[in-house]
Image (cartoon, rainbow, N blue to C red; front, top):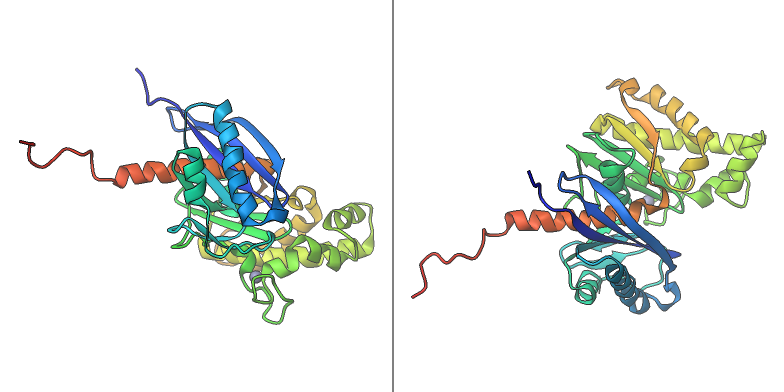
Length: 323
Ligand SMILES: [Zn+2]
């Protein structure tokens, strides 16, 4: 028996350094696989006037290589307006981005429907559908890097909130008197656990160097990572208390190297979470690496289009026959 045909979907992941693209295929049984992927240097110096056309060009080239693509998704490194398809605030890319249209011009360049998604939520969609979150009903995801991204999935679906900002775990207040955060608040989890603050806590130039030194037994680096790990554990523990998820997925550049960080975080979670059985919450590292954002954007674009199809008025049959 023939099932539904496989469909192809494009994902674009706009990063401050690289613009990644991927083509994924949704099989007839609903499973996903990656067909192709690539990366170019983001034209960051030119601001939105250079970057938005670049999204169209990169997408167009991917569509030339893989005919039959029917939707596209764009991962945005910050806040956006899902209704207007425009960006609001991107902390690491030179603007002005407030109200800058992205979905419409990229859609016009590609000739397919385009949906935007925050890059951390895209990471969550990808890990949930074909990575470390597979099979989880509820999942909490964190990306540890330049910033601390977050995502929450409930009933097998990434929760977006009314404006796509749900799951900003990195911007929960951990310490009311804590250091300044890029979001305007102070004492956020991100203000302690983003890469440059990890380096600062460990007395090193970079977070990678901190991890390296801690591995070699450097006492100051070990102590610094423990301090950050404690805040991370408090933040994740809060999410466990609120959501009782079955899985926590930790990704981003720092997570891959940060056993010490995660060990301390686990201890802190066990110490603080009293309402649910922590042993039943799996804490795992992400599986899709730096491609999760592009893959998740592609899947999101496909899922938004499918949902729109299902809610659209059925066909165009007129109520009365034409004369
Ligand atoms: Zn913040």
